[in-house]
Image 1 (cartoon, rainbow, N blue to C red):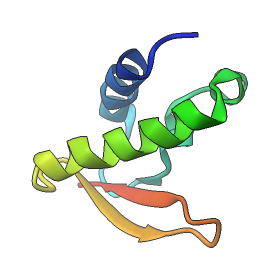
Image 2 (image 1 turned 90 degrees about the vertical axis):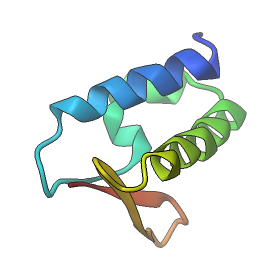
Image 3 (image 1 turned 180 degrees about the vertical axis):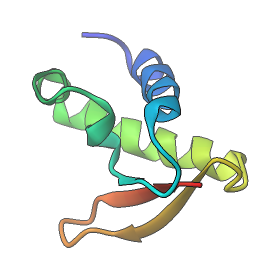
Length: 78
């Protein structure tokens, strides 16, 4: 399986396919079977790294919004 930095790059790249106003989770940026192949610890790390990357962008393209009931971070494409 790819290392977490490669997965982060892939996730960031995939956000360009989203339309303005779309709400998504990091796992939505991967096909279901690919997401399930990522070890849980790497998925958690990927979520943290993705949030940090988004915060560095100052909400210019993507904003972190509320969390789901299962504590997953939701994002909005602006």
